[in-house]
Image (cartoon, rainbow, N blue to C red; front, side, top):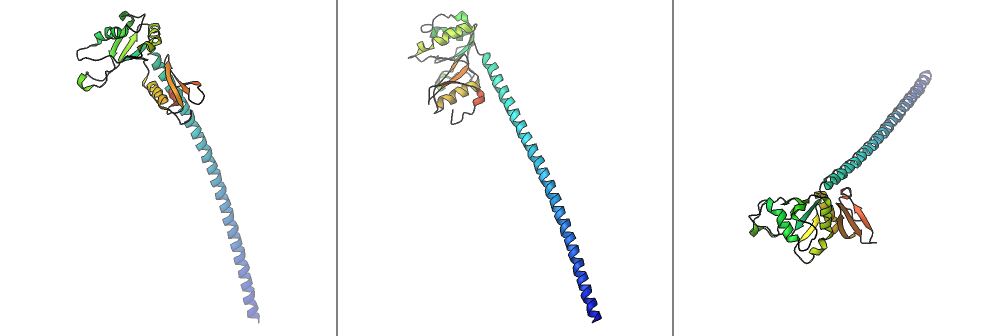
Amino acid sequence: HASGDISNDTKIYLDNLFKRYFTDMKSEIEKAVVEVSEKTDKRLNEIETENKKLKDDIKAVNVKLQELTIAMNDTAQQTRKSSVRVFGIPENNSENREDCAEVVYEHLKTKIQNFSPGDIEVAHRVPGGKPQISNRSKPRPILVKFKFRGVKDVVIRQKKALKGSDLRVYEDLTPANRKLLYELKQHDGISQAWTVNGKVLGKLARNDSIVQYTVGDLPLGPNL
């Protein structure tokens, strides 16, 4: 019986020993899991904070970029404040830059009053290669820069007098403003779009409000 008691005592001892071992090991594992979890949560929070800061930085850069884009476009438009584009004047293969001012005047003088060839600083066809009349469906517009903005304003104010003819006169716009004006004219939410002194305006179809748009509004969304 003594050997049996020893065997039982040994078994109980070993059982308790294993229980303590596994309890201690479980405790260590749980502690390690908690520690890893806390470190992971901390790092995730750090990453989330870093991502938010990065997004805020990107947003700030985009805002600055948009402001710079608008400012550069406004500056470029300002250089065009005395210029117009005249559409509908036929081309010929022998015309040159020196002829353009006189050609513009001759075509506009019966409709547009109070300006003379001497008011034109420079006039030329917009780039597009040497005209080949047989291959060109429409004549290239002529870019006209007046010596004074006031003369340009006089011409623009009278452009409605050209209605019924092939001639059209528009303000000379930057490529970005031309794109903006085109998109506004195509937009279902805009009933009318036009420019005044290089500023692009649109009339809202829903309430007839007139809104000024900038290149910062591109691309136009579905709701204006």
